[in-house]
Length: 236
Image 1 (cartoon, rainbow, N blue to C red):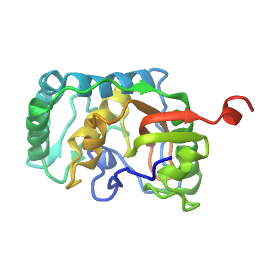
Image 2: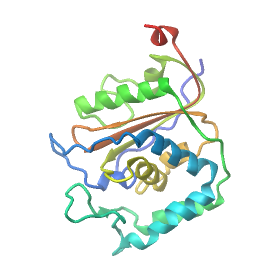
Image 3: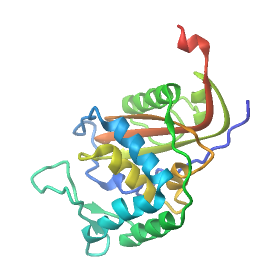
Image 4: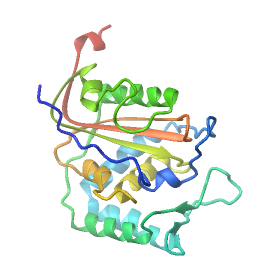
């Protein structure tokens, strides 16, 4: 088994747009329900960006331009002032981050779509649930585990692995919004979340979303080139 080769994507600062969208630092944040379509929608959005980056820029990103106000304020098209969970977003970089993402996607080469993997989704779900219980954030688990350690509990991986984390609110079109926020990567200097999404080395993805102690929603995306589950996990 190859040793870890994955990016430690930053979750500090703004954590893309989502961290600032209606987030609450309380012990009992309002829960964002997870729609039944979340995972198919998120997978579709990931693969739209990967397989047709120019189309994604044209159909998803460029239409967001009119919703930036007063420099750094982003008012999403579904904003509802009567809905306490739908907040205006105060971004770090303002429309400049969106414009940079548009340019990146317009110049990006298409890459192969990702397949949703049950084993990686289990890894993502276990980690999300652990963070929900202990209020943790970031890529190092409360038990000191790295992504490689968490994946190796359920099987073996080859090639490359990576992890994206999202904390915040996304009450409308959740899967698509989370992908857009991670691609724009506002406040993340190295655009690490975006680079993982667009990395041609990845063929598989695991997805998990749900409530968190400090945020209405937390999502985990685990990427891998190859993953072989442990037979003991498949046949307990």
